[in-house]
Length: 300
Image 1: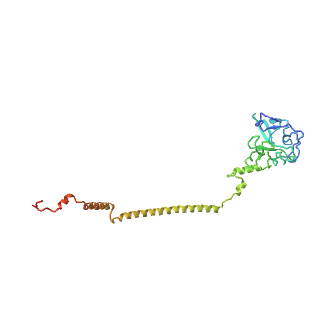
Image 2: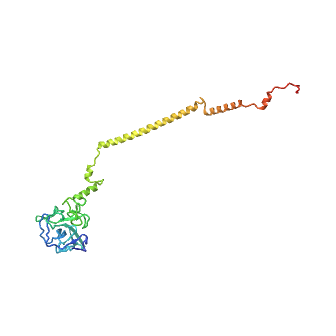
C-alpha cells in the first residue's frame, strides 16, 4: 500500500490511498453483476476480503489533462473514488476539476457490512446493473463525513444527507436515500429542550382551560391578599385614633372647661395661699401677747 501525491490535486495525501490491484478479486455492481471493464480495480479491503473498487486502471493518470481523456480515479480511505483532472480554458487559464464517485464492491451481496451501500437508487443503470453514483462533499473536502447523492450539496442540511465514516468499515449507512442517524440529529438540534422526539411527545401538556383557570386563580389570590392588607391597615388606623381621643379626654376632665395654661396657673395660686396660712409665729409675736405687769409693784 502506498500514498499518492498529485501536485495539481487540492487534496494531496489526505485520505488518498491506493492499493495494488488484486487480480483474483472481482468488482460487483449493486445488483450482483460483475463489472467486466478492467479499468475497475479493488481498492481498500476489510480483512482482505471486502472493499470498494475504483476506475484506477485508466491510461490517463490521476490529475492528468482533460485533453488526454478521462483520468484515473484515486481510492479514498472512506471507500469513495476521487477523480481529478486538469484543464485549460479558452483564454489559456488552467484549473482542476474534482469529482467523487461510489463505484463497485468486491462482494456481490452489498447488504453485508463492508460495502459502501449508499446512493444505489441514484446510480446510472448500465446493462441492467447499477453503475457508478456521483457524490458531493458537504464541506468540500475528500474526508468529509456528510455527503449528498448527485452533483449538488442541496441535501446537506436535510435528512437525506448521507453519513460516511472517514475509514471504510468503521460503520455503514443504514439507508440508501434517507439516513436515520442524520434525521435523529436534526430533530435533536431543532428541539428547544435538547431531548428526543419520543420524550417530548410523552411529556404532559396543559390544556387551554387549565391554563385559564390557573391565571384566574392567581388574579383572585392577589386581590384577596391586597384586601386583607387594606383591611388590616384601616383597623390599625382606627384603633390609633381611638387611643388618641381617649388620652385627650382624660386631660380635659381634670378641670372642665379649662385650658392647659389656666389649669397650671390655678395650681400655682393655690399653692402660694396654703404656704401663707401655715407660716409659724416668731418670738416677737409671742412677746407682744404676754400680759403687762402692775405699775409700781415692788419685787422682793
